[in-house]
Amino acid sequence: MSNTTGSATWLRRLLIGTGVTLSVLLLLTPLLLIFIAAFASGVGGIISNLQDADMLHAIGLTLLVAGLTVPINLIFGTLIAWCVTRFTFPGRRLLLTLIDIPFAVSPVVAGLLYLLLYGSNGPFATWLDAANLQLMFAWPGLVMVTVFVSCPFVVKELVPLMSTLGTEQEEAAVLLGASGWQVFWQITFPNIRWALLYGVILTNARAVGEFGAVSVVSGTIRGQTNTLPLHIELLQQDYNTTGAFIAAALLTLMAIATLVVKAVLQWRMHR
Amino acid sequence: MSAWRSKSVLPGFTISLGSSLFFIGLVILLPLTGLVIQVAELSWQDYWAIISDPRVVASYKVTASAALVASIFNLFFGLLMAWILTRYRFPGRVLLDGLMDLPFALPTAVAGLTLAALFATQGWFGQYLALWDIKVSYTWLGIVVAMVFTSVPFVVRTVQPVLEEFGPEYEEASATLGASPWQTFWHVIFPEIKPALLMGTALSFTRSLGEFGAVIFIAGNIPWQTEVTSLMIFIRLQEFDYAAAAAIASVVLLVSLILLFVINGIQQRYQHISGALK
Image (cartoon, rainbow over all chains, first blue to last red):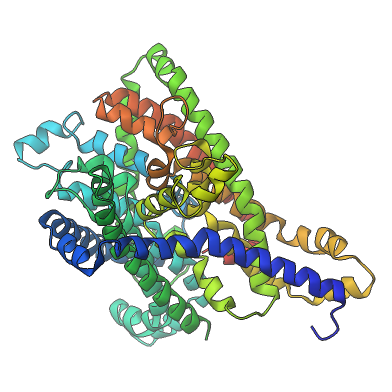
Protein backbone atom coordinates (compact mmCIF):
# COMPACT_ATOMS: atom_id res chain seq x y z
CA MET A 1 0.00 0.00 0.00
CA SER A 2 3.06 2.26 0.12
CA ASN A 3 2.75 3.24 -3.54
CA THR A 4 -0.93 4.18 -3.43
CA THR A 5 -1.68 7.39 -5.22
CA GLY A 6 -3.72 10.25 -3.81
CA SER A 7 -6.93 9.22 -5.52
CA ALA A 8 -6.61 5.61 -4.30
CA THR A 9 -6.26 6.83 -0.71
CA TRP A 10 -9.29 9.00 -1.20
CA LEU A 11 -11.31 6.07 -2.58
CA ARG A 12 -10.14 3.85 0.28
CA ARG A 13 -11.27 6.38 2.88
CA LEU A 14 -14.63 6.85 1.17
CA LEU A 15 -15.33 3.10 1.02
CA ILE A 16 -14.27 2.40 4.60
CA GLY A 17 -16.19 5.46 5.82
CA THR A 18 -19.40 4.43 4.05
CA GLY A 19 -19.14 0.79 5.15
CA VAL A 20 -18.41 1.60 8.77
CA THR A 21 -21.15 4.26 8.97
CA LEU A 22 -23.81 1.97 7.48
CA SER A 23 -22.77 -0.92 9.75
CA VAL A 24 -22.87 1.26 12.85
CA LEU A 25 -26.32 2.61 11.94
CA LEU A 26 -27.81 -0.71 10.82
CA LEU A 27 -26.17 -3.22 13.16
CA LEU A 28 -24.50 -1.57 16.17
CA THR A 29 -27.13 1.05 17.05
CA PRO A 30 -29.91 -1.58 17.43
CA LEU A 31 -27.64 -3.48 19.86
CA LEU A 32 -27.12 -0.37 21.98
CA LEU A 33 -30.83 0.45 21.95
CA ILE A 34 -31.74 -3.00 23.30
CA PHE A 35 -29.63 -2.59 26.44
CA ILE A 36 -30.51 1.06 26.99
CA ALA A 37 -34.23 0.28 26.67
CA ALA A 38 -33.89 -2.74 28.99
CA PHE A 39 -32.41 -0.46 31.68
CA ALA A 40 -35.20 2.14 31.20
CA SER A 41 -36.72 1.40 34.62
CA GLY A 42 -33.42 0.73 36.34
CA VAL A 43 -31.99 -2.38 37.90
CA GLY A 44 -35.09 -2.73 40.07
CA GLY A 45 -37.26 -2.93 36.95
CA ILE A 46 -35.06 -5.64 35.53
CA ILE A 47 -35.19 -7.71 38.72
CA SER A 48 -38.97 -7.46 39.05
CA ASN A 49 -39.50 -8.31 35.38
CA LEU A 50 -37.15 -11.27 35.61
CA GLN A 51 -38.97 -12.58 38.68
CA ASP A 52 -42.28 -12.60 36.85
CA ALA A 53 -43.63 -16.17 36.73
CA ASP A 54 -44.48 -16.05 33.01
CA MET A 55 -41.02 -14.71 32.15
CA LEU A 56 -39.35 -17.45 34.19
CA HIS A 57 -41.51 -20.08 32.53
CA ALA A 58 -40.68 -18.72 29.08
CA ILE A 59 -36.96 -18.88 29.88
CA GLY A 60 -37.29 -22.46 31.16
CA LEU A 61 -39.31 -23.59 28.14
CA THR A 62 -36.81 -22.01 25.73
CA LEU A 63 -33.97 -23.86 27.46
CA LEU A 64 -35.94 -27.13 27.32
CA VAL A 65 -36.64 -26.76 23.58
CA ALA A 66 -33.00 -25.91 22.79
CA GLY A 67 -31.75 -28.62 25.16
CA LEU A 68 -33.68 -31.30 23.26
CA THR A 69 -33.20 -29.90 19.75
CA VAL A 70 -29.42 -29.55 19.87
CA PRO A 71 -28.57 -33.21 20.75
CA ILE A 72 -31.10 -34.56 18.21
CA ASN A 73 -29.66 -32.45 15.40
CA LEU A 74 -26.10 -33.11 16.52
CA ILE A 75 -26.50 -36.91 16.34
CA PHE A 76 -28.49 -37.06 13.11
CA GLY A 77 -26.43 -34.29 11.51
CA THR A 78 -23.23 -36.23 12.13
CA LEU A 79 -24.75 -39.45 10.77
CA ILE A 80 -25.98 -37.68 7.63
CA ALA A 81 -22.59 -36.04 7.08
CA TRP A 82 -20.83 -39.41 7.55
CA CYS A 83 -23.21 -41.04 5.09
CA VAL A 84 -22.83 -38.47 2.29
CA THR A 85 -19.08 -37.83 2.62
CA ARG A 86 -17.83 -41.38 3.29
CA PHE A 87 -19.87 -43.32 0.73
CA THR A 88 -20.96 -42.88 -2.87
CA PHE A 89 -24.43 -44.09 -3.70
CA PRO A 90 -27.25 -43.15 -6.08
CA GLY A 91 -29.34 -40.29 -4.68
CA ARG A 92 -26.50 -38.80 -2.66
CA ARG A 93 -26.92 -35.35 -4.24
CA LEU A 94 -30.68 -35.54 -3.72
CA LEU A 95 -30.12 -36.26 -0.03
CA LEU A 96 -27.95 -33.13 0.22
CA THR A 97 -30.63 -31.02 -1.48
CA LEU A 98 -33.39 -32.43 0.76
CA ILE A 99 -31.47 -31.47 3.91
CA ASP A 100 -31.39 -27.88 2.59
CA ILE A 101 -35.19 -27.62 2.42
CA PRO A 102 -35.68 -26.29 5.99
CA PHE A 103 -33.52 -23.26 5.20
CA ALA A 104 -35.52 -22.44 2.09
CA VAL A 105 -38.94 -22.89 3.70
CA SER A 106 -40.51 -19.86 5.39
CA PRO A 107 -40.75 -20.45 9.17
CA VAL A 108 -44.51 -19.93 9.18
CA VAL A 109 -44.91 -22.56 6.45
CA ALA A 110 -42.68 -24.89 8.48
CA GLY A 111 -44.96 -24.52 11.49
CA LEU A 112 -48.03 -25.03 9.30
CA LEU A 113 -46.64 -28.29 7.84
CA TYR A 114 -46.46 -29.79 11.34
CA LEU A 115 -49.81 -28.36 12.42
CA LEU A 116 -51.55 -29.90 9.40
CA LEU A 117 -49.97 -33.30 9.99
CA TYR A 118 -50.20 -33.63 13.76
CA GLY A 119 -53.04 -31.20 14.57
CA SER A 120 -56.63 -32.09 15.45
CA ASN A 121 -57.65 -32.18 11.76
CA GLY A 122 -54.63 -34.14 10.59
CA PRO A 123 -54.34 -37.76 9.45
CA PHE A 124 -52.97 -38.89 12.83
CA ALA A 125 -55.62 -37.10 14.92
CA THR A 126 -57.68 -40.15 15.93
CA TRP A 127 -54.57 -42.16 16.75
CA LEU A 128 -53.04 -39.33 18.79
CA ASP A 129 -56.36 -38.81 20.61
CA ALA A 130 -56.62 -42.48 21.46
CA ALA A 131 -53.07 -42.42 22.82
CA ASN A 132 -53.95 -39.21 24.68
CA LEU A 133 -50.99 -37.44 23.09
CA GLN A 134 -51.16 -33.77 22.36
CA LEU A 135 -48.26 -32.65 20.19
CA MET A 136 -49.51 -29.35 18.78
CA PHE A 137 -50.11 -26.39 21.12
CA ALA A 138 -47.86 -28.21 23.60
CA TRP A 139 -44.11 -28.41 24.17
CA PRO A 140 -43.46 -31.50 21.99
CA GLY A 141 -44.73 -29.54 18.98
CA LEU A 142 -42.33 -26.71 19.79
CA VAL A 143 -39.43 -29.18 19.82
CA MET A 144 -40.56 -30.83 16.56
CA VAL A 145 -40.69 -27.60 14.54
CA THR A 146 -37.45 -26.36 16.09
CA VAL A 147 -35.69 -29.58 15.05
CA PHE A 148 -37.02 -28.97 11.52
CA VAL A 149 -35.87 -25.36 11.17
CA SER A 150 -32.40 -25.93 12.63
CA CYS A 151 -31.45 -29.38 11.27
CA PRO A 152 -29.23 -28.23 8.33
CA PHE A 153 -26.62 -26.37 10.45
CA VAL A 154 -24.51 -29.33 11.66
CA VAL A 155 -24.65 -31.02 8.25
CA LYS A 156 -23.62 -27.84 6.44
CA GLU A 157 -20.63 -27.36 8.74
CA LEU A 158 -19.45 -30.97 8.52
CA VAL A 159 -19.95 -31.87 4.85
CA PRO A 160 -17.41 -29.45 3.28
CA LEU A 161 -14.81 -30.21 5.98
CA MET A 162 -15.21 -34.00 5.87
CA SER A 163 -15.06 -33.97 2.06
CA THR A 164 -11.78 -32.05 2.20
CA LEU A 165 -10.32 -34.28 4.91
CA GLY A 166 -10.76 -37.39 2.77
CA THR A 167 -10.86 -40.95 4.02
CA GLU A 168 -7.23 -42.15 3.97
CA GLN A 169 -6.65 -41.93 7.72
CA GLU A 170 -9.91 -43.69 8.50
CA GLU A 171 -9.28 -46.42 5.93
CA ALA A 172 -5.82 -47.01 7.38
CA ALA A 173 -7.33 -47.37 10.85
CA VAL A 174 -9.89 -49.90 9.57
CA LEU A 175 -7.17 -51.93 7.83
CA LEU A 176 -5.20 -51.96 11.08
CA GLY A 177 -8.22 -53.51 12.74
CA ALA A 178 -9.99 -50.58 14.43
CA SER A 179 -13.72 -50.92 15.03
CA GLY A 180 -16.15 -48.38 13.56
CA TRP A 181 -16.59 -46.73 16.95
CA GLN A 182 -12.80 -46.44 17.42
CA VAL A 183 -12.37 -44.98 13.93
CA PHE A 184 -14.93 -42.30 14.64
CA TRP A 185 -13.71 -41.29 18.10
CA GLN A 186 -9.98 -41.53 17.53
CA ILE A 187 -9.59 -40.46 13.90
CA THR A 188 -12.63 -38.53 12.69
CA PHE A 189 -13.76 -36.75 15.84
CA PRO A 190 -10.46 -34.95 16.62
CA ASN A 191 -10.46 -33.60 13.06
CA ILE A 192 -14.05 -32.35 13.06
CA ARG A 193 -14.62 -31.33 16.68
CA TRP A 194 -14.37 -27.55 16.12
CA ALA A 195 -16.65 -27.64 13.10
CA LEU A 196 -19.04 -29.82 15.08
CA LEU A 197 -19.05 -27.35 17.97
CA TYR A 198 -19.57 -24.51 15.49
CA GLY A 199 -22.60 -26.34 14.09
CA VAL A 200 -23.93 -26.84 17.61
CA ILE A 201 -23.54 -23.13 18.42
CA LEU A 202 -25.47 -22.14 15.29
CA THR A 203 -28.16 -24.77 15.94
CA ASN A 204 -28.53 -23.51 19.49
CA ALA A 205 -28.83 -19.85 18.43
CA ARG A 206 -31.57 -20.73 15.96
CA ALA A 207 -33.35 -23.04 18.43
CA VAL A 208 -33.39 -20.39 21.14
CA GLY A 209 -34.46 -17.58 18.82
CA GLU A 210 -36.97 -19.26 16.49
CA PHE A 211 -40.17 -17.26 16.21
CA GLY A 212 -42.30 -17.94 13.11
CA ALA A 213 -42.49 -21.74 13.16
CA VAL A 214 -42.90 -21.84 16.93
CA SER A 215 -45.65 -19.23 16.96
CA VAL A 216 -47.80 -21.35 14.60
CA VAL A 217 -47.70 -24.50 16.75
CA SER A 218 -47.56 -22.83 20.15
CA GLY A 219 -50.93 -21.15 20.51
CA THR A 220 -48.94 -18.80 22.80
CA ILE A 221 -50.57 -19.95 26.00
CA ARG A 222 -49.09 -17.82 28.78
CA GLY A 223 -47.11 -19.84 31.28
CA GLN A 224 -47.52 -22.99 29.17
CA THR A 225 -46.32 -22.84 25.57
CA ASN A 226 -44.69 -19.43 25.48
CA THR A 227 -41.02 -19.36 24.57
CA LEU A 228 -38.89 -16.29 25.20
CA PRO A 229 -39.14 -14.87 21.62
CA LEU A 230 -42.93 -15.32 21.73
CA HIS A 231 -43.02 -13.72 25.17
CA ILE A 232 -41.45 -10.57 23.67
CA GLU A 233 -44.47 -10.19 21.42
CA LEU A 234 -46.92 -10.71 24.30
CA LEU A 235 -45.14 -8.17 26.51
CA GLN A 236 -45.14 -5.63 23.71
CA GLN A 237 -48.86 -6.17 23.13
CA ASP A 238 -49.35 -5.61 26.89
CA TYR A 239 -47.57 -2.22 26.47
CA ASN A 240 -44.81 -3.48 28.78
CA THR A 241 -42.08 -2.19 26.45
CA THR A 242 -39.40 -2.35 29.12
CA GLY A 243 -40.30 -5.97 29.86
CA ALA A 244 -40.13 -6.77 26.15
CA PHE A 245 -36.66 -5.22 25.92
CA ILE A 246 -35.50 -7.10 29.03
CA ALA A 247 -36.51 -10.39 27.38
CA ALA A 248 -34.84 -9.14 24.19
CA ALA A 249 -31.66 -8.27 26.10
CA LEU A 250 -31.45 -11.84 27.48
CA LEU A 251 -31.66 -13.20 23.93
CA THR A 252 -29.13 -10.60 22.76
CA LEU A 253 -26.65 -11.77 25.40
CA MET A 254 -27.05 -15.27 23.96
CA ALA A 255 -26.47 -13.87 20.45
CA ILE A 256 -23.31 -12.01 21.52
CA ALA A 257 -21.98 -15.13 23.26
CA THR A 258 -22.67 -17.05 20.04
CA LEU A 259 -20.68 -14.52 17.99
CA VAL A 260 -17.74 -14.62 20.43
CA VAL A 261 -17.59 -18.44 20.48
CA LYS A 262 -17.96 -18.44 16.68
CA ALA A 263 -15.00 -16.06 16.30
CA VAL A 264 -12.84 -18.19 18.62
CA LEU A 265 -13.79 -21.40 16.78
CA GLN A 266 -13.09 -19.91 13.36
CA TRP A 267 -9.69 -18.79 14.58
CA ARG A 268 -8.97 -22.33 15.88
CA MET A 269 -10.19 -23.99 12.66
CA HIS A 270 -7.98 -21.80 10.47
CA ARG A 271 -4.88 -22.45 12.53
CA MET B 1 -26.38 -52.98 -1.63
CA SER B 2 -22.66 -53.50 -1.57
CA ALA B 3 -22.63 -53.05 -5.36
CA TRP B 4 -23.31 -49.29 -5.12
CA ARG B 5 -21.43 -48.31 -2.02
CA SER B 6 -18.29 -47.90 -4.16
CA LYS B 7 -15.30 -49.74 -2.75
CA SER B 8 -15.24 -48.08 0.64
CA VAL B 9 -13.85 -50.17 3.47
CA LEU B 10 -15.26 -47.76 6.03
CA PRO B 11 -17.91 -49.05 8.39
CA GLY B 12 -21.33 -47.63 9.14
CA PHE B 13 -22.88 -47.41 5.68
CA THR B 14 -26.11 -49.20 6.58
CA ILE B 15 -26.61 -47.45 9.90
CA SER B 16 -25.75 -43.94 8.65
CA LEU B 17 -27.83 -44.27 5.47
CA GLY B 18 -30.68 -45.82 7.44
CA SER B 19 -30.75 -43.09 10.04
CA SER B 20 -30.33 -40.34 7.41
CA LEU B 21 -33.33 -41.64 5.48
CA PHE B 22 -35.32 -42.08 8.70
CA PHE B 23 -34.57 -38.53 9.85
CA ILE B 24 -35.12 -36.82 6.50
CA GLY B 25 -38.27 -38.87 5.91
CA LEU B 26 -39.77 -38.18 9.31
CA VAL B 27 -38.68 -34.57 9.83
CA ILE B 28 -38.71 -33.14 6.29
CA LEU B 29 -40.67 -35.29 3.81
CA LEU B 30 -43.58 -36.55 5.94
CA PRO B 31 -44.68 -33.02 6.99
CA LEU B 32 -44.62 -31.98 3.32
CA THR B 33 -47.16 -34.72 2.57
CA GLY B 34 -49.45 -33.23 5.23
CA LEU B 35 -49.65 -30.09 3.14
CA VAL B 36 -50.23 -32.05 -0.06
CA ILE B 37 -53.09 -34.01 1.57
CA GLN B 38 -54.74 -30.81 2.81
CA VAL B 39 -54.42 -29.05 -0.55
CA ALA B 40 -55.61 -32.12 -2.47
CA GLU B 41 -58.94 -31.94 -0.66
CA LEU B 42 -59.67 -28.59 -2.29
CA SER B 43 -61.27 -28.38 -5.71
CA TRP B 44 -59.28 -26.50 -8.36
CA GLN B 45 -61.79 -23.59 -8.31
CA ASP B 46 -61.63 -23.26 -4.54
CA TYR B 47 -57.85 -23.44 -4.62
CA TRP B 48 -57.65 -20.73 -7.25
CA ALA B 49 -60.18 -18.55 -5.41
CA ILE B 50 -58.08 -18.72 -2.22
CA ILE B 51 -54.72 -18.01 -3.77
CA SER B 52 -56.02 -15.25 -6.06
CA ASP B 53 -58.01 -13.49 -3.34
CA PRO B 54 -57.25 -9.76 -3.82
CA ARG B 55 -56.02 -9.28 -0.25
CA VAL B 56 -53.68 -12.25 -0.65
CA VAL B 57 -52.46 -10.97 -4.02
CA ALA B 58 -51.76 -7.60 -2.36
CA SER B 59 -49.61 -9.49 0.18
CA TYR B 60 -47.64 -11.20 -2.63
CA LYS B 61 -46.87 -7.79 -4.10
CA VAL B 62 -45.84 -6.30 -0.75
CA THR B 63 -43.62 -9.29 0.08
CA ALA B 64 -41.98 -9.66 -3.33
CA SER B 65 -41.33 -5.95 -3.86
CA ALA B 66 -39.89 -5.46 -0.36
CA ALA B 67 -37.73 -8.59 -0.69
CA LEU B 68 -36.44 -7.42 -4.07
CA VAL B 69 -35.49 -3.96 -2.80
CA ALA B 70 -33.92 -5.45 0.36
CA SER B 71 -31.82 -7.97 -1.56
CA ILE B 72 -30.64 -5.32 -4.05
CA PHE B 73 -29.60 -3.12 -1.12
CA ASN B 74 -27.74 -6.07 0.39
CA LEU B 75 -26.06 -6.79 -2.95
CA PHE B 76 -24.33 -3.38 -2.81
CA PHE B 77 -23.88 -3.23 0.95
CA GLY B 78 -22.58 -6.82 1.10
CA LEU B 79 -20.15 -6.22 -1.75
CA LEU B 80 -18.87 -3.04 -0.07
CA MET B 81 -18.39 -4.81 3.28
CA ALA B 82 -16.74 -7.87 1.73
CA TRP B 83 -14.39 -5.52 -0.15
CA ILE B 84 -13.29 -3.37 2.78
CA LEU B 85 -12.99 -6.40 5.09
CA THR B 86 -10.68 -8.27 2.70
CA ARG B 87 -8.72 -5.44 1.02
CA TYR B 88 -8.10 -2.85 3.73
CA ARG B 89 -6.59 -2.93 7.21
CA PHE B 90 -8.05 -0.42 9.65
CA PRO B 91 -8.72 -0.25 13.40
CA GLY B 92 -11.85 -2.16 14.39
CA ARG B 93 -11.81 -4.37 11.29
CA VAL B 94 -12.00 -7.64 13.25
CA LEU B 95 -14.90 -6.33 15.31
CA LEU B 96 -16.70 -5.15 12.17
CA ASP B 97 -16.17 -8.59 10.65
CA GLY B 98 -17.79 -10.24 13.67
CA LEU B 99 -20.66 -7.73 13.62
CA MET B 100 -21.63 -8.93 10.12
CA ASP B 101 -22.91 -12.20 11.62
CA LEU B 102 -25.12 -10.48 14.19
CA PRO B 103 -28.35 -10.78 12.15
CA PHE B 104 -27.99 -14.59 12.07
CA ALA B 105 -27.29 -14.85 15.79
CA LEU B 106 -29.91 -12.37 16.94
CA PRO B 107 -33.46 -13.80 17.20
CA THR B 108 -35.74 -12.22 14.61
CA ALA B 109 -38.26 -11.09 17.22
CA VAL B 110 -35.51 -9.08 18.93
CA ALA B 111 -34.54 -7.53 15.60
CA GLY B 112 -38.15 -6.61 14.84
CA LEU B 113 -38.83 -5.12 18.26
CA THR B 114 -35.65 -3.04 18.15
CA LEU B 115 -35.94 -1.80 14.56
CA ALA B 116 -39.57 -0.80 15.19
CA ALA B 117 -38.45 1.25 18.21
CA LEU B 118 -35.53 2.85 16.33
CA PHE B 119 -37.69 3.93 13.40
CA ALA B 120 -40.83 4.92 15.35
CA THR B 121 -41.65 8.63 15.00
CA GLN B 122 -40.19 9.26 18.49
CA GLY B 123 -37.30 6.83 17.97
CA TRP B 124 -33.58 7.52 17.54
CA PHE B 125 -33.79 7.39 13.73
CA GLY B 126 -37.49 8.04 13.27
CA GLN B 127 -37.43 11.56 14.76
CA TYR B 128 -34.89 12.73 12.18
CA LEU B 129 -36.59 10.94 9.28
CA ALA B 130 -39.85 12.58 10.37
CA LEU B 131 -38.28 15.97 9.57
CA TRP B 132 -38.10 14.82 5.95
CA ASP B 133 -41.59 13.35 6.21
CA ILE B 134 -40.24 9.81 5.85
CA LYS B 135 -42.12 7.17 7.78
CA VAL B 136 -40.55 3.75 8.22
CA SER B 137 -42.23 1.96 11.12
CA TYR B 138 -45.67 0.61 10.17
CA THR B 139 -45.08 1.14 6.44
CA TRP B 140 -43.75 -0.83 3.46
CA LEU B 141 -40.36 0.80 4.05
CA GLY B 142 -40.29 -0.77 7.51
CA ILE B 143 -40.71 -4.22 5.94
CA VAL B 144 -37.73 -3.46 3.69
CA VAL B 145 -35.61 -2.40 6.69
CA ALA B 146 -36.48 -5.60 8.58
CA MET B 147 -35.65 -7.74 5.54
CA VAL B 148 -32.37 -5.88 4.96
CA PHE B 149 -31.31 -6.43 8.57
CA THR B 150 -32.13 -10.15 8.72
CA SER B 151 -30.36 -10.98 5.45
CA VAL B 152 -27.21 -8.83 5.71
CA PRO B 153 -24.73 -11.74 6.12
CA PHE B 154 -25.60 -13.65 2.93
CA VAL B 155 -23.79 -11.51 0.33
CA VAL B 156 -20.90 -10.59 2.67
CA ARG B 157 -20.22 -14.21 3.57
CA THR B 158 -20.45 -15.58 0.02
CA VAL B 159 -18.32 -12.86 -1.63
CA GLN B 160 -15.70 -12.49 1.11
CA PRO B 161 -13.97 -15.91 0.65
CA VAL B 162 -13.82 -15.43 -3.12
CA LEU B 163 -12.14 -12.04 -2.73
CA GLU B 164 -9.71 -13.50 -0.18
CA GLU B 165 -8.71 -16.26 -2.55
CA PHE B 166 -8.54 -13.99 -5.60
CA GLY B 167 -5.97 -11.76 -3.92
CA PRO B 168 -5.04 -8.16 -4.70
CA GLU B 169 -2.26 -9.06 -7.20
CA TYR B 170 -4.62 -8.90 -10.18
CA GLU B 171 -5.92 -5.48 -9.21
CA GLU B 172 -2.39 -4.23 -8.73
CA ALA B 173 -1.37 -5.59 -12.13
CA SER B 174 -4.40 -3.96 -13.71
CA ALA B 175 -3.64 -0.62 -12.05
CA THR B 176 0.01 -0.83 -13.09
CA LEU B 177 -1.12 -1.31 -16.68
CA GLY B 178 -3.00 1.98 -16.42
CA ALA B 179 -6.59 0.88 -15.71
CA SER B 180 -8.80 3.23 -13.71
CA PRO B 181 -10.29 1.84 -10.47
CA TRP B 182 -13.64 1.52 -12.24
CA GLN B 183 -12.12 -0.41 -15.18
CA THR B 184 -10.27 -2.68 -12.75
CA PHE B 185 -13.46 -3.40 -10.87
CA TRP B 186 -15.61 -4.00 -13.92
CA HIS B 187 -13.17 -6.01 -16.03
CA VAL B 188 -10.99 -7.78 -13.46
CA ILE B 189 -12.85 -8.21 -10.17
CA PHE B 190 -16.49 -8.34 -11.16
CA PRO B 191 -16.28 -11.37 -13.50
CA GLU B 192 -14.55 -13.32 -10.74
CA ILE B 193 -17.07 -12.56 -7.97
CA LYS B 194 -20.20 -12.58 -10.14
CA PRO B 195 -21.37 -16.13 -9.26
CA ALA B 196 -20.87 -15.58 -5.53
CA LEU B 197 -22.59 -12.21 -5.71
CA LEU B 198 -25.55 -13.68 -7.60
CA MET B 199 -25.82 -16.54 -5.17
CA GLY B 200 -25.62 -14.33 -2.06
CA THR B 201 -28.30 -12.04 -3.47
CA ALA B 202 -30.55 -15.01 -4.31
CA LEU B 203 -30.14 -16.37 -0.77
CA SER B 204 -30.92 -12.94 0.65
CA PHE B 205 -34.05 -12.70 -1.53
CA THR B 206 -35.26 -16.19 -0.50
CA ARG B 207 -34.75 -15.44 3.15
CA SER B 208 -36.57 -12.10 2.84
CA LEU B 209 -39.58 -13.70 1.12
CA GLY B 210 -40.13 -15.93 4.14
CA GLU B 211 -39.14 -13.52 6.90
CA PHE B 212 -41.83 -13.25 9.56
CA GLY B 213 -40.55 -12.50 13.06
CA ALA B 214 -38.72 -9.27 12.29
CA VAL B 215 -41.32 -8.06 9.78
CA ILE B 216 -44.50 -8.33 11.84
CA PHE B 217 -43.10 -6.13 14.62
CA ILE B 218 -42.35 -3.22 12.29
CA ALA B 219 -44.89 -3.64 9.47
CA GLY B 220 -48.00 -2.50 11.34
CA ASN B 221 -49.79 -5.29 9.45
CA ILE B 222 -52.40 -3.09 7.77
CA PRO B 223 -54.60 -5.18 5.42
CA TRP B 224 -53.93 -4.50 1.70
CA GLN B 225 -50.91 -2.33 2.53
CA THR B 226 -48.35 -3.90 4.84
CA GLU B 227 -49.38 -7.54 5.21
CA VAL B 228 -46.74 -10.02 4.10
CA THR B 229 -47.75 -13.44 2.74
CA SER B 230 -46.44 -15.30 5.81
CA LEU B 231 -48.81 -13.19 7.89
CA MET B 232 -51.74 -14.05 5.57
CA ILE B 233 -51.09 -17.74 6.29
CA PHE B 234 -51.03 -16.96 9.99
CA ILE B 235 -54.30 -15.00 9.78
CA ARG B 236 -56.07 -17.86 7.95
CA LEU B 237 -54.89 -20.21 10.69
CA GLN B 238 -56.30 -17.97 13.40
CA GLU B 239 -59.61 -18.10 11.53
CA PHE B 240 -59.27 -21.92 11.67
CA ASP B 241 -59.37 -21.97 7.88
CA TYR B 242 -56.66 -24.61 7.59
CA ALA B 243 -57.44 -25.34 3.94
CA ALA B 244 -56.88 -21.70 2.95
CA ALA B 245 -53.71 -21.50 5.01
CA ALA B 246 -52.42 -24.66 3.30
CA ALA B 247 -53.33 -23.32 -0.16
CA ILE B 248 -51.44 -20.04 0.36
CA ALA B 249 -48.55 -21.94 1.96
CA SER B 250 -48.34 -24.21 -1.09
CA VAL B 251 -47.70 -21.14 -3.27
CA VAL B 252 -44.97 -19.87 -0.92
CA LEU B 253 -43.45 -23.35 -0.67
CA LEU B 254 -43.37 -23.83 -4.42
CA VAL B 255 -41.60 -20.49 -4.91
CA SER B 256 -39.04 -21.31 -2.17
CA LEU B 257 -38.33 -24.76 -3.58
CA ILE B 258 -37.83 -23.35 -7.10
CA LEU B 259 -35.43 -20.76 -5.67
CA LEU B 260 -33.61 -23.49 -3.73
CA PHE B 261 -33.07 -25.51 -6.90
CA VAL B 262 -31.92 -22.41 -8.80
CA ILE B 263 -29.42 -21.60 -6.03
CA ASN B 264 -28.15 -25.19 -5.93
CA GLY B 265 -27.86 -24.99 -9.71
CA ILE B 266 -25.70 -21.84 -9.51
CA GLN B 267 -23.59 -23.52 -6.83
CA GLN B 268 -22.97 -26.60 -8.94
CA ARG B 269 -22.18 -24.61 -12.07
CA TYR B 270 -19.51 -22.67 -10.26
CA GLN B 271 -17.98 -25.41 -8.17
CA HIS B 272 -15.01 -23.26 -7.25
CA ILE B 273 -17.13 -21.09 -5.00
CA SER B 274 -18.86 -24.02 -3.32
CA GLY B 275 -16.18 -24.33 -0.65
CA ALA B 276 -17.09 -20.88 0.53
CA LEU B 277 -20.73 -21.72 1.04
CA LYS B 278 -20.83 -23.36 4.36
